[in-house]
Length: 273
Image (cartoon, rainbow, N blue to C red; front, side):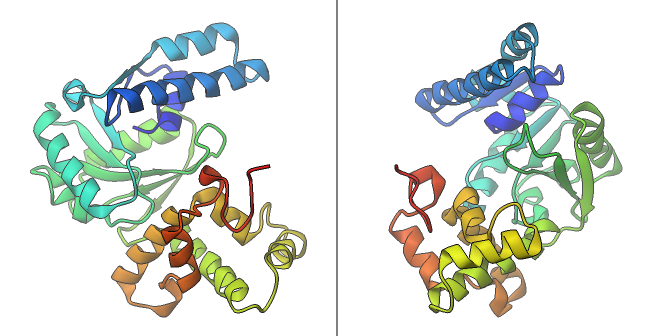
C-alpha cells in the first residue's frame, strides 16, 4: 500500500499496515506519511488529535509476512509487470483469509495478468487511485473475468463508502478508462515538441488557456513521471499495437538519461532552482 493510500485509509479510521522493501524504505515511507499529515494539520484541514490518531493507526514494516491477517491488500509498487506478478505470487502465499481481497493500484497493467499469478484470481481486483491520493477524489475499479461479486463489493465499499472517493468502473483493458484517453494525448504533445512544431511553453499554454486544462500536457508528464508515462504507454502498445500508444524516441531518451520530471528535479522543465 502506497503512503498516500495508507494515509487516507488511516484518516478514515482503518487499521493499516504498510510494507516496504527495506528497513530504510519503511522509515522513509513513515516519514512521508507524517509529513503529509503535518501539512494537513498545519493548514487546518485536519485537527491535531485526528492527525495523531491517524498516524497511530499506521504500522510500517519491511516484512511482507506482517500482511498475513489483512482483509484487503493493495499493491502500489513500481509500474513493472514482472515485479507486480512476482509480488502477487508472494501475497497469495502470505495473506491467509479465504475472503481477503488482493488489489493492485496499477494504472495500466491488465488485472487478469496479476490475478493468474495467484491461486485465487476471483479475489484480485484493480483499485487505481490518482495522485496525490489525499487530494484527488477519483478511483477506478477494474474487474477481470474472474473477479467475484464479493471482491467487487469489498473494493467498492472501501473506496466509495469508507474513503468517500468517486468510483468509476472499468473493464479489464490496458490503461483502463483514464489512461487509455490521457496517454495518447501526452504522447502527442511530446511528439509535437520533439518535431520542433512548437515550444513546450506554447504547447502547455495552449491547453491551459485555450482548453481550460489545469496543467499543460508536458508539465503533467513531469508531474506523473516520465518513467511512469513510458511504462503505461508500453503497456498500452503491447495490448493494442496501435501507433498512437508507442512511446516517442524523445521520451525514451529522457527516461534513459534519468530526466524523469519533478521527482528527479528535471524533465521537460527544470525544477532545481
